[in-house]
Length: 313
Image 1 (spheres, one colour):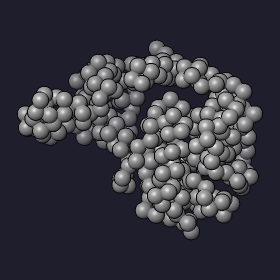
Image 2 (image 1 turned 90 degrees about the vertical axis):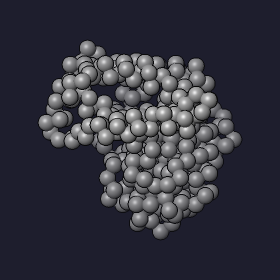
Image 3 (image 1 turned 90 degrees about the horizontal axis):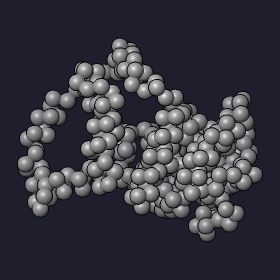
Image 4 (image 1 turned 45 degrees about the vertical axis):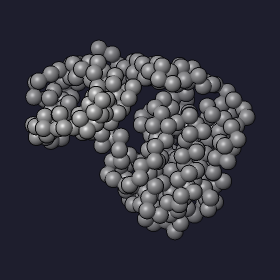
């Protein structure tokens, strides 16, 4: 893929900050769509990490219908921040989830970039208003939070800060759309944004039920996959609720099941993430999942997710 989609042209080149799981996945997506990528990370084993990643990602790219080689010539890697970001059209930051670190990083970035550079953070909890605190011009900085791995998952939560310009929001939405993602504008800054809040609410109850011995860990997976997971993959929870009310729609559903839902909410567990709980659940997870390696599980998951996406599209 040598020629760039005209909308993507203005977002070239891209600097990816941080070569962890998310950063490498973003870098792969950008490269596979024809962009030039500079990958910055201060780690000393950066080259090995990058080589290892590209060795293992080929089959996923094939399943996605993206080119799986020939693009590494457009990738440069290094541990010099100024060099990596000078002249970049977009910066996608994927550093550790630490406020002070991100604040300092974006303040440093600002001194080397053009004013029109689009500044995106993959932060999963910290709002742009906080990250941009030390910046002089906060208007081009916002959150572009993917669901892991961004190469496969369509969702990107686009969350502007109080000072983000409408133009930057439009640019971010266009950037992700042109990469084949499904960006969603989150209209208000809340802790954890939306996808993780929903996920964590469900995980809290799932972990509580496992911890209480109500159900085994792998059984929770089957229960969800064969009921709400299947339904939500097709229609989402809110339309699901609307359809659950029959011809009366969501109002009928709430009137009919409202009291039951309230009872259930009151009965839900409140598991504290202390050492004992973590240790109990970790033991159960090893009993449930150690028959395959993490990489094998992840590959199986990605293949199934991509198959579901194909059917849904």
